[in-house]
Length: 392
Image 1 (cartoon, helix red, strand yellow):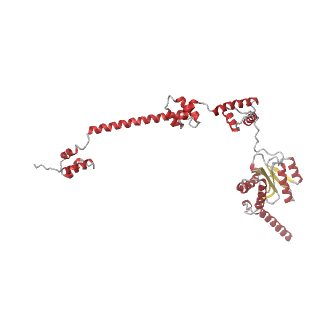
Image 2 (cartoon, helix red, strand yellow):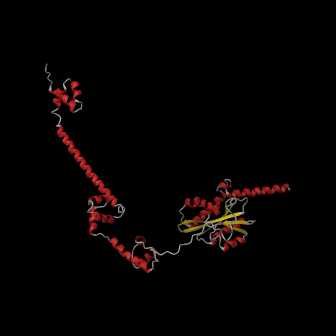
Image 3 (cartoon, one colour):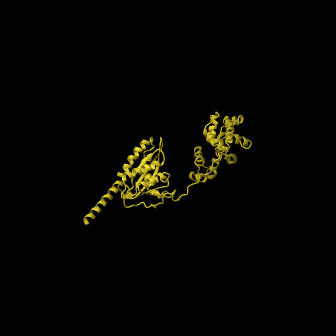
């Protein structure tokens, strides 16, 4: 049997196929036409010792396990620390420092600083001075607050205690006094609770003749009235309106800076002067103090107007007037505010009332302005009277 000799270059190329490219020994031997035993002898000196490789892999696995155990222990400690410190996580730094001082023998200081997000230097500074100057001043101020509160027999609240402190020469703020009193549960003695109104109670001045019948067949039969308010830079401004229920037309209105009975009286006088009703009109309102006053009811009687008052606390009894006030607020006040002066609101209200009566299209009356709806009624009434006279 002849022995075949291979060049060193051939052997090196065969070893590269196994070591570098990862082919198996039988495949490379079959491809190159050599025996598997010969190929193994060429490859063996190049490969590292298996026992050494296995020991290195085992050492690496042990190191990884040890690292994971340390990391797991760290995570568990941070978890336990978070559970214990959940009450101080959103507190100030000094509260966290107090917690760290109580648990410094249980957890590492570096970990507590990292979890609680505070500086280690700040903790060491707190150890030198646990109570800040602000806290010391709060303690002194609290004694003055308690003295003022006790001297008033528990009657004074934060504002009156603050006034006492200012008279004594203290330069603290009102919110600081409120904070200290709230923190230490120092409360003023309150009087009796105001009795709440019973909703739905009927008026004793006049019964509810309207009974939510907001549809009438002619003008000057039913008027509804209500009061609303407007905020300005100069203060509040109040508006009283009187509406004719037939066409929802504003027949009287008044604006004043005070919420008195003259506000409702002026709006009523304007409606009587402009409409001059020839028949007995029903005037419906809520139980506001302006509308149930003696002077207002006397003025209604002098004008030959029958009063009607809805039940207390029930806005549905005067829903139409509430709706028109809502349109006034949405279309003028809220859209063009804020208002600087009362005069500007009065001028804008005058323009809006004219626009509402003569231009604004209202769906309940057929999509036409209130003035046009009333004009159509008088025109049709004139036609009927003319036809009756011709037929007779």
